[in-house]
Length: 446
Ligand code: AMP
Image (tube, rainbow, N blue to C red):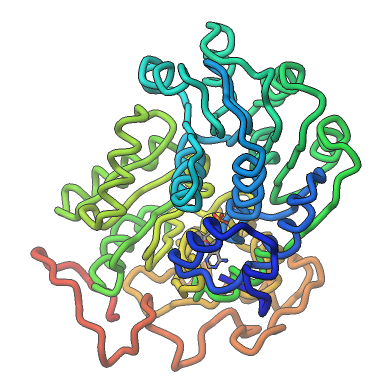
């Protein structure tokens, strides 16, 4: 986690909040926290261009809690004073956990509501009113329509991951919610990107906002050891098995493009007796939370996910992100690999690239502005894909004139230097042990 030299004490946060962040081991605010908190404490509206992994949750949670506890008011039945909207249930739960952590020395009530689970416990939690309500838009609308929730007491409103909200088709719900909350309030909108639709939303929601942006993709991505493995599509399962033989792959998040694809990968891993589970939109909320809990606790070594639910996942200790399939949007790649190297740690991201995915790789490299190193010393290496990539790179044409080799570890040939080959892991080769398998199969020497 990139942080600054300024301490939390310079931000005028109240003692119970400073204590909580100190107990979390945060020594200094991250750039988004340093840039946002002073404005938010003054009650200004804010447009934050930042993605998860930058510390943006604390950037809005700390000033919200400070405002609520300094202006204490009794919340009426079914009412909330601050509303945080998040696109996915997982992200909503993470935000709720953050309020729990940062607010542990304050006397504030918070509650999280999301779809896919019974309404009853959520209705019960809302009955006496809450200070902070974290919600996904669909369930919020449900509770409101059934009159279990009032939004006329909202003092602070946060729209988190606004670009993702729009991608997921939440715009109509968001507009309705906007009409339901008081016009006099403090508002914040956070988004990883600022396309024109977001700027339009900003005009509607925010009143003369302060704009802050941090540039996490580069800094986050820089800490990640990124590698690409060229492989024919039909060999991807065998390659995954081979990669998972390396015991440095302690906790792996594997990405598939589709839900069915994710299920197929898990089925195959289960056949190989590798503990794996999926997390995607077709699973019930309980099953998703259960998979996440087991993964967090280390009971499941491999979690196979699709993009929609994985964005914003905050699981400590993911050693490897494996792109079993490359995403067709370069942005998603940045989000995916950012699931490792959380909070200052380093991590490894391995991308399996088949012949049909070369174009995706090119766009990804353009976005992250560097060449991803090739691992060619594995049993399923496809030289023909590697050669096509290398020749496209030499001709320069297909790569939009971009020059490769713009950082010391990249090579214009697209092939790894000798000492960088043959590695899926962060450990030095001498210390690596091989993950034991029962059936013999050509193993990647790692
Ligand atoms: P977020 O971008 O809010 O999802 O935060 C990403 C991770 O950074 C979480 O695991 C937080 O606990 C952690 N984090 C947030 N603020 C700080 C900080 N000031 N110093 C160190 N870690 C932090």
